[in-house]
Image (cartoon, rainbow, N blue to C red; front, side, top):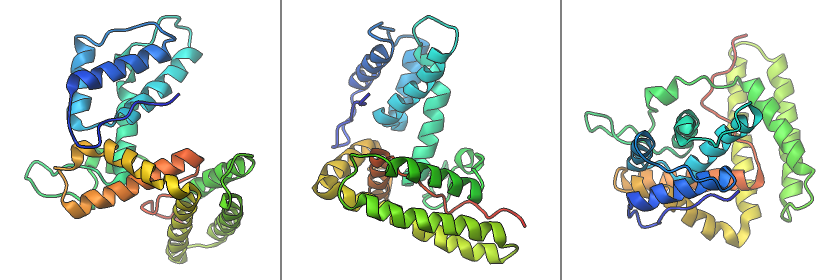
Length: 254
């Protein structure tokens, strides 16, 4: 299910934002309309003012809806129940693209994650690699991959398997050196996604700028462009269902 987009020029219309969220919730509820009023309106208003992209909100609604459908309730999903999923996805998104606002003292926090994000538990290195291998294997079996991507994924898979084996047989300080290879492989995944996008990269960049529009005046120009590049990378990985490796996680203790 495709999600609505935001204006690319940084303009803001709370009514339009609420309308699009309401429409998406109705689609998830198979046409049943649940109006955004009262507590739900205040919640959506806070999402909009914080700059949470509509795409992230829709992903959060989808995540909650999947569990809602698997449960016993036959009632339409209410938006208030989606708050936790939206917030968790928003934290992940900000961390991925480097989009966070200055702290209460006005100091720029680029390079330092907010505590709520920094302290969230991340999977171990070997767990990340195992998940990445599973994802690459699954994607490689698709028949609709762009030219050049299957070959790139084969090389990436070989590197991931070798890195996982090395982590299993390496102890102590020597493990830290393996983290550089993790960074290299993650960069190769991003490069493969960009190459696969071809000329459509311009449309993906426009979408990234739309998602980040409300942050444009909150970040220095250099940080803004860096966030846009990270946003493009994230969108491309979502498009081709490619994994991300987190270089910031520490190697497990020996």
